[in-house]
Image (cartoon, rainbow, N blue to C red; front, side, top):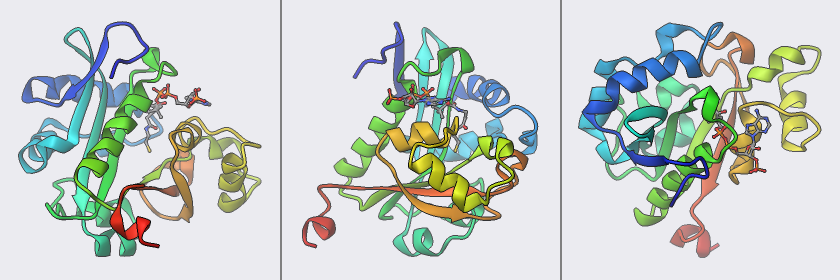
Length: 216
Ligand SMILES: CC(C)(COP(=O)(O)OP(=O)(O)OC[C@H]1O[C@@H](n2cnc3c(N)ncnc32)[C@H](O)[C@@H]1OP(=O)(O)O)[C@@H](O)C(=O)NCCC(=O)NCCS
């Protein structure tokens, strides 16, 4: 699996990448997004200790130009969670369930200079492959909607519907929909995010080979 950007490859995240991931967070989630929500080395190390096979980076040579953090979470937690914290039980991912049905996408980011070259799509292919290989039910996440900041006259629901129907474009939700995720609606008070009015769009991708789905 090759990125269309020359020389870029997706690789398992290792301890040697953590400083690069922390640096990248500042570029990927600039103000007004709070830097208190950026991963630090301590949290990233916990993710590697708890769920090493769910953490990836994109590398150009030895430089980290993308990162992708995930947690495995139970069906019950996925269905009942109201915000990102509850989805994984906080940044130390104490809600990690080794048999969980859902691969929960905590974070994805591509260096601004490398965007729109298919690198985000490569991360998503990894995520979907993991779900299929582990015979899980779904990939699930909730996505920022930062360009809602330009459409405050609309309700959150009308804005998200407009992006889903491609009448509007959102710099984050639009790419994620292009990867084949289905929108489950607006989740209010999902995480502190002024541009998105603290809301997110719930998204899922169902494993087409899952016996429960095939049996329906
Ligand atoms: C969201 C993000 C990861 C996408 O990564 P990327 O590598 O630039 O995306 P891709 O090149 O894989 O693009 C996938 C599709 O989305 C489209 N797309 C990408 N960015 C877009 C934008 N700003 N506006 C409209 N469409 C866009 C691409 O044209 C492509 O469309 P296609 O499949 O029809 O060819 C990247 O923009 C990013 O790091 N954003 C900041 C961090 C962030 O918000 N992360 C998500 C947190 S929920």
